[in-house]
Length: 114
Image (cartoon, rainbow, N blue to C red; front, side, top):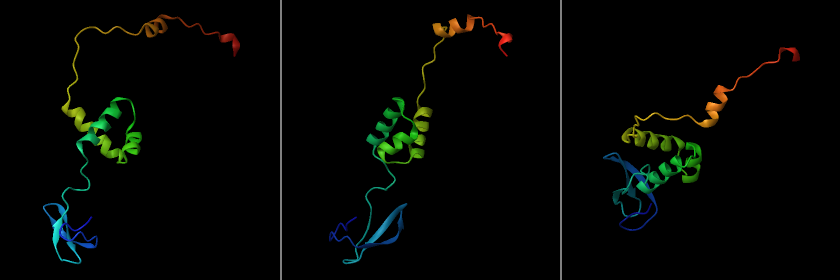
């Protein structure tokens, strides 16, 4: 992070103002704060994380791909899920044919094999 006044890279921490770290340049003594917090991610990253989650990737895989914490991805998905309402259907849902077939199949146990 360079000084906005003299473009010097040497700085030191100089307190916190409005929940943002303040710095002081060692060469010109100019005090400045960062323009954006370091923990704020762009909206594109959030959208990409949500899209990857909907595609079936787990939180840790998304975190590795986007180089962010999997807990952050979890929080984004959790907030998104609370804001989104899924459509509710009142129509009866048919079961899968295979499930119906297996449920009606009778199994005979052969007790002589043991």
